[in-house]
Length: 414
Image (cartoon, rainbow, N blue to C red; front, side, top):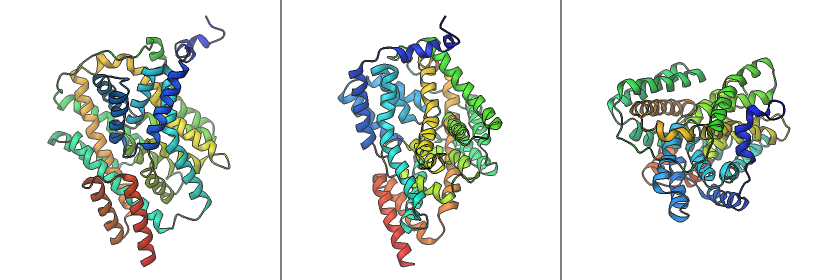
């Protein structure tokens, strides 16, 4: 037995203490950093970049293995593209490879968004036309995400109805608990009402994770999810409140980066941690940078951080929102091959996805539409941005730049 109570953590410590292949870890970091600097276009585009690099060019995974990882990360709550990237890093270089993959892919956009937060906090830019143009473009980005997700995840009468019910209830009962209950209800409705999908493969994954480590990570995930709200209620400490809020959001977001908008909005705007305008400005800026949309947390943390310069807050928010993903990956990977072939699970997953479409529709209305579209020129900019994204397939960072220019022009001419 290890000294004290460390034996309780022995499975997890065994993973971290395994001797890393330094060369492989550095290679994973370099490749992920390049992707973090160049991967524009959101989660779906990220998966295309990953397949090109990891499957076609470097052959770290087979097409089948990559498809299995994508399927798993679409099921888990959290940022799907980041989870796929961390999984590839884990397969290549163990736990330290997963950490290197996360750092390389995440840090570029996190640094850029934190820097934007310092600009917003230090200067009076919230009333500027260019910033309002960015906020309008964010509405178009959410609308495009909704359009694509609805076509894939709610294509029939039953799932479309589930999505509409989820949207209506989310708007009428705008609480974080409502989001969780709607996702759970979607799983139950899918299990009861939707047919099972086609038979899927149950191949093993290229991961060597002890069952004890998986069980420990799942237990820690649930312990933090249940225990952090209790600690927050007992101790009125700002940084603890940040950890609890962002950890809970990272644990409960299904559907990827765009769905994080309503959950984060309800965590930071009603308590007056930041203003509505600051929130929408940061979300618009997040569309213009590469990498995962979850790095929006760095922007929020930088504005709300307990330290004067906001760096500590950015680090807290960023770590707290991503940490559940790591725990869930280590916890679920050894069990996934057997779980995903079960017909009942496929039906429940289809119901969850339909509920996610409804949550995104509610987010499009509020805070997106109600907080941003205030005039005919605003609507014209949003409509033009949507057409550029959905029909012309323009890159989001280009559309954000055009939106900023249009917003500035409208302000000058008005």
